[in-house]
Image 1 (cartoon, rainbow, N blue to C red):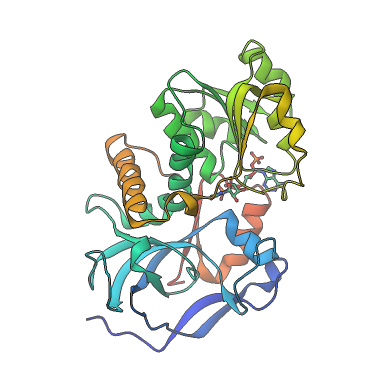
Image 2 (cartoon, rainbow, N blue to C red):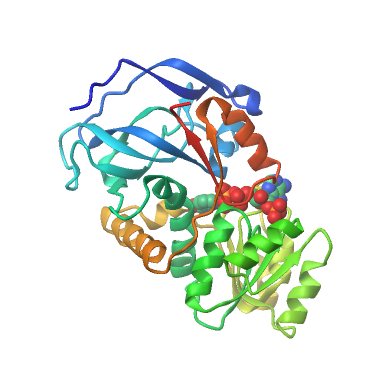
Length: 332
Ligand code: NDP
């Protein structure tokens, strides 16, 4: 068994705010796994937009001080007993829960899974949360079929690139939006059939041109406040507006009558609601790993930051400077 120190590096917040509230510490206590938990020594930590919501207070932290971060990959160094779902000491796993911005995390075994032997470990942390989000959205929020016209906002972002690749595999006609030509190129390479640089072109006009005025049967909108009305405008009759995030701020309360002109569906799903049971988590994770390995999906990593530079990583993500996954290396 690996020797486990008492203290570890990690990032905590004691109050909500800008990136200045992120505190890098070198003397946090290493957690002890309880029943149903595994202690993982994290090799790579995935950054997700949701981490910024817990930092700012848009989503309240369960208690303060709080260790941010929702996913990582690494090795199990201790098990806490109880239901382990076949996991044991030494297994290389990827997991999704709370408390990821640290060298060690006591993660629920129910939300940890072995990384396939033919997959690089860091790919697990780069793929899991955003890949599962995209997969469950196109399977459950709006089951997308071959030939469907769909609109993906922030198509060159972490989740957006997954949507492009998975929707391409389904055979959808993908219209993506992005703010720069570089991002337009990145999303096009990932499978977007048509890209709109919204800094230059009017999105609704372009969508209506491309769809011959029919609109899109599904709009996947992780941008939120600034795009909500536009997304409704771009929807086809009987279409689904899947609003799944708040990168530009939370969508204000909506008047339900806005849905009537198109008999539209409105959804506000979260990934954790689609993978609540172990069976669902395994089903979708295995499907995602199959896609990555068999369809040779490109798991684009924007940059790996030292854990001590987490504030720069948040600044880059919120400043729209990134395309693909941001990782943290807890050894630095
Ligand atoms: P991204 O990598 O997509 O980064 C956000 C992107 O949003 C930016 O790069 C930018 O792309 C675009 N954007 C548009 N307006 C703004 C703005 N005002 N501020 C910042 N960014 C803006 O992040 P993620 O892939 O991590 O997350 C994308 C969205 O998906 C988030 O809203 C996140 O909360 C949501 N999400 C939801 C989940 C769920 O369970 N519901 C799970 C996972 C993610 P551009 O420059 O091209 O406009």
